[in-house]
Image (tube, rainbow, N blue to C red; front, top):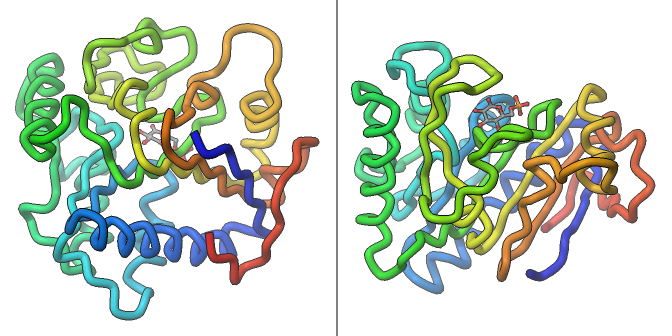
Length: 253
Ligand SMILES: O=C1O[C@H](COP(=O)(O)O)[C@@H](O)[C@H](O)[C@H]1O
């Protein structure tokens, strides 16, 4: 692990471009190192931020990108809750990522088979690795401290064998989902959390500074050999006392 960096921006509007530059810089590095850039996407508020900021980058070439999903809701792609469906309409349609470069779930399958099928797709896409090592995972965090579809006090937090797991009792709707597990998340070369807004301030303090009781899911993300960033805005950072960076909007991370 290279250490955690908590970077605070005045607002989400300033955070967005810095996130896009971080994605582009890790993509450039991965393409030089191994000819492909693997990116794990999360849903929620990240969809609109990435869909606005990535296509705005000059000369972005996604022809050798592989995009997967850190978690996905088990609903048809045309359902407004489908993370793949949202990215397809809002992002993939605006960048030159090939269809073959997007690894999505098969939402027609029951949740258990869907998770197994998605795990097989991931393993096929990373044939040289026992556990796929993504170049970059972009994660969000819910107000309860969940990340991916790994929720507080859920048995999936203790999963050690599967790289992808089904969940059929998600406390946040929709209840059926498929999620990467910690063994895979914590092998990524770089993990970036994005968390904005005052409603995230209490849970962010608990995750970054600790508190009573078991560690929340987001606090369990610590890449064993990779980078860990928390990109947050001032309202989300309001209660923090840990050391943070405040680099301004032109930050190169
Ligand atoms: O349900 C989900 O929520 C989390 C957090 O979303 P946010 O809107 O609070 O940023 C998200 O990261 C995850 O992918 C999604 O399935």
